[in-house]
Length: 265
Image 1 (cartoon, rainbow, N blue to C red):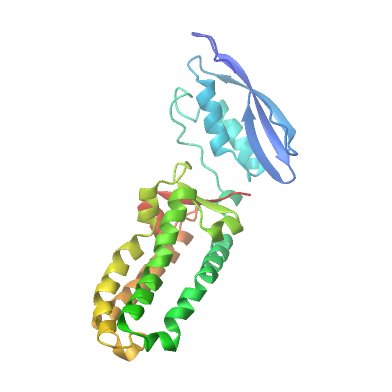
Image 2: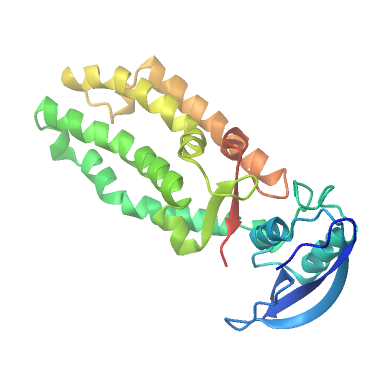
């Protein structure tokens, strides 16, 4: 892949590739492996300063399936109109997609259920009556594990892989809003509610457990527990409102972390 000669405009081939009902865009070279066929081919004139290597990397990053044909054509139009910024080799901040790529709500719901099933044994252990009659150190250990296991799992899996096991099964991934891999810091920020609330919960309830109080009984809840319940309900409501209010289906925690969830197939 070579760059246009200095001082002259250059022409590149832009391919719209199709596999079933999925589309993608490729420049200069048409990748026809894995069932992809050429649906359309167009020539686009680019600036002399265009860095074709960077442009190809950006197109590959933003134009992974699933795209609709209309979205693929919009990419070609964006290239032709130099909407990718000037020169084309610098930033590529203005290509945006809608439709299937961000249609993740049902998959995220399924992923949540799968992850919940993974941690169901721990929940049952915490709620199991004989545990509450065991020694205080054992009860504290189970309670700490019950409160912290899922947040730690979520932070680690998202920071390392961009996915929990549930998201892997449901074929969605969490990325930086620029659609590059998520960082560990962003994974922590996506779980900011748990990061703040869990330590408070532990500080409040561990002394009660040591004193032999059954904290699973709502009659024994502290004022702090009740406040955290209402805070949690408010947080959940805001999450639902934000995820429905934007086309990329970013929830409140995604705006805090600068992340977005996309489909992987």
